[in-house]
Length: 173
Image (cartoon, rainbow, N blue to C red; front, top):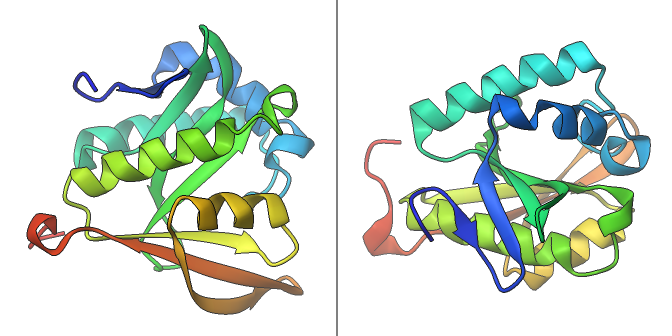
């Protein structure tokens, strides 16, 4: 890992920047990629507003959303954001349809989670619909534990968490 760039065996994760806008707008506008995300599919304007928030979040917190690239090709995004419902710092991941089913989500989400915990964040949550088996499998496979449930829009939502090592936890989050 160099600074905020995270490398895995086959992926490169980099903090989002304005140069990623076209790829992120394409991802967030795709129902197969973003339809189950909190807030659903985004318009171009919404994607631009979120990009500004994500860049600011990196500057303020030292963690945030990464792009995922394999061999230089944009495959999706992963990383953390602050959940608007007060549940805390939350892991997110979304892939372009062409990247699904190749283990990229698991590999990228795991790398992003480890990065965030290594930065001293003491707790990271992730929320998945009960019927979203692909996301649930990824969350379980990277060591996140089911800790809570709630209802949203007629769906049962499952809350997973990962805790940082006690000696690395931030005191003033």
